[in-house]
Image (cartoon, rainbow, N blue to C red; front, side, top):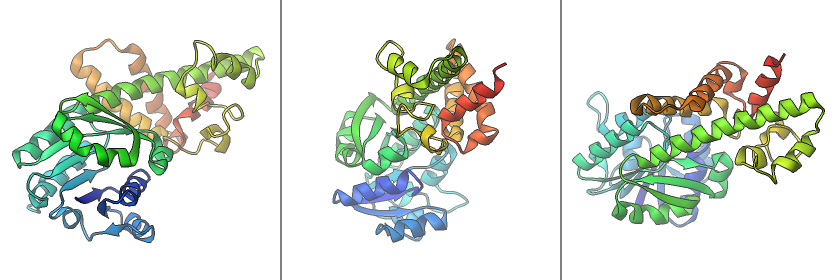
Length: 299
């Protein structure tokens, strides 16, 4: 199948490369010229535009920053042809961006109205997961379309979960990242409290990682250097998963919370904390760097 991959950033490029390495015919594009040159230098076939890449494509994969970008690309802007108008008849559109549930459902509706198939398939696992083809995919769409996409997704990830109908992949992603944000803050607060009480980082890690406090934010993304040598804390909080992206995802959670009326006080507090974090140096730091804010604001 001819596959177009649009969005060749830190996540998209290694995903596209893994698809090509698995034997799929992949043509990529990015609106940033430097990203296109990086992709070309990495050996990926690239097109002159997104519509050029998608023309006649059987599969169109998008990895964009916002839902508005996805919708604009699908339908075209200012009279220009959109992706839906140039892909092969009945093409499978797979959006791997992290966007709002209602935006994902709007993208599904546009694709179906144009005679195509559609899945929302946001990812978890960060740049390392993209590079190593160990991403987790949360997929929304029909059973038939999910099975059609499975070989492509399994070339880029280790775990592929069908979450239900249109938009429910995004629903799973927003819920997962709200859990992650709350737990990362809790782990950071515990380490600062341990510091104040005279507890070593290693001692707290050894206890909590083998007790009821065990979680990914502790055992993989430990916010202090030492206990987990591969965590961002050991490289001055270089992301990883940047505070700006966590703030973006919590904005989507806030939108969903408001729309559903859920009493999600911890989620909303995490949103406020990461909003402040991303307004400062945290914008380009790993989100585990929130521990430095907690230290600074502790009396």
